[in-house]
Amino acid sequence: MATARRTVADGLVVGTSGNVSVRVGDTVLVTPSGVPYDRLTPGDVTGVDLTGRQVLGALVPTSELPMHLAVYRSTDAGAVVHTHAVHATAVSTLVTELPLVHYMVGALGGPVRVAPYATYGTEELAANMLRALTDRTGCLLQNHGTLTYGTTLDQAYDRTAQLEWMSRLWLTASSLPGRTPTLLTEEQVTEAGKRLRGYGQRPASPGE
Image 1 (cartoon, helix red, strand yellow):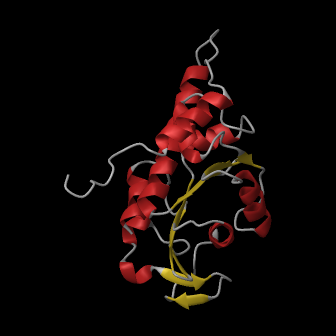
Image 2 (image 1 turned 180 degrees about the vertical axis):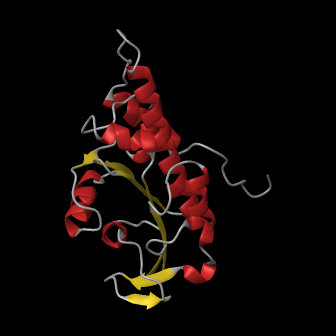
């Protein structure tokens, strides 16, 4: 519930748009459909199996359940975050791939693709999203929003926030009259991605 509320507080969703899920074994815990996040309680969480059959809760699961299930059936994801973040959604209407404006795109596996538009909640949208996610941990959904996944909910959320920030960066840089943003090469992004995989604190060795 805290992550769902955080998407609202951070301006990534408005009202009941967007949704969050976590996989626990063969059960997917997901936010319900049409309930404002500030009113959600732990008892409102719904659970489904990997076929979509509801096994927990009384509320109807999010209408975007096909996207969440497609990710879990096709990857090792532990959590999925879907938002309607304004800058990322704006970018999805302009290009077929987020321009390589910053090396942090390497944290998502490489150039972030835009999945072609399809009606929300459909298997067609889920299929388009999966293709855009090939070898990536995040994508844009044309005229719709974002989807990212991670091994944990914090990681999935951080990837969403990073994607929105990079989208805002590109829109800001490209809006200056007479100026074109300098972009990175795919080789530079790949090298950054390798370094990012080892970034951060490492577990201490015995005796340290």
